[in-house]
Image: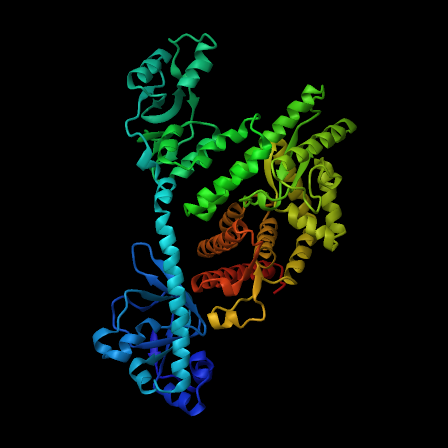
Length: 630
């Protein structure tokens, strides 16, 4: 960090700062002559905690963060161009000597290369009676105080919900049973049954060379052994569930619950750092239910039961989302949990419809693969919205066309019962344009490339958010290869998609509160202005590198592995995405659509949004530069 007297080239930039801008010119120049300017490199510490403060720091260029220097730094505030650091010390300055009491318990760090102007407190005292300066600092300090009170009120609300949070945010190690009953893989089923009875447990872990080889439960003994008259003298390795799903001791309790629901299991061996080493504990569904009194979460397993009414899916899903949200679960965990829940709804309905057709005497003529698109395809469908899906089947024949037409029609009807409304754009598997054989899909993509109208490009953008959900995995692999082959010969399609995105830039939001409140744009659409451009840029850049499907997190990871973006930027991008999604979830839960009114946000939320939008805008520019469109 370099410090010096400001020169002429820096003077005009400083005098345009709101701190100086309203002063009489002579007064401003006089005070400016006593200031110093600083150039600070990215990640550098500007002010340390508990050190004497010398004055106000005006942010001329760049962005700084006010942080609490704990084990993991907590960012209290982001201050950008036209912002001020040091307002909290004004009272001390005006009442005592600088040397005795101007200090702070927080640190200030540069988030990027910055230019600052230091206005010494000693100089500030001499100009305190300048009318504009006093009014300006009073106004800025009042705004800061308002935001502090708002933040404190939020924390009080959080504290009242602490009991609920601590149950769902407990770690697996807090709830698991430490004493694990184990048997060797060559021990008999009788040995395993005796071990369960003597220790009063409902499962045993099977070890092989001190590593987890399998699990055997009471249910396994009944359904796989007694029901089939398997002799109890047989070794357990013939009946156990091999390579069982495990979970780490540091995982959250709701992650254990999500894993159990996702795999329809009730027992999870708990491991340390190495996945298949001997278990350090075990956690059961009963353990989770005892520790977590949020009934909505534990009832999620009912959704897979065909007797559970589809009409009750939506209220149950809303209850689960509320539980996770009130527990302050991380955004990606909320998305993973809710997406897994909705995936199971789809899979249940697909299976149910296939069974219904079979009962009508209609055998499936060939294999199929079912895909979801849009927020479901990106694993972002945190609440039930509309249907976005398509269907691929193995062979093109009249029999296949007729069967899968009826199949898709029934699926759409059942999904609507579950609370997924019909897609307004008719992008569903019961539409001719969204169903067909692998060959017809190749031809469809070729047609999109040749006739890329605005309507066509809209379909393509939605298509590239697809994710395989259920069906034949071999067919899914064949379909993926066919799409990639077609893209290699239709690169112009990606160029046209990129050109569309150039005409829809992510908005450049200003960081300071004064700038935001004075903007012509008082509102921002989270989906239209931020998320859609982000997702489209992510999809286009992934497709350019040969990847055409996957969730948002998977696509960011893919670009990182391809070294299209750095690991540091990938982390910034993930954080930006989570911040925007978090705001979107908040708006949706309050039935406020997806438009945020900037004036209603606290300082911190505004700054977080600004920072996130800035990162997403930078990513969009990266995608455009790939096609030389910047």
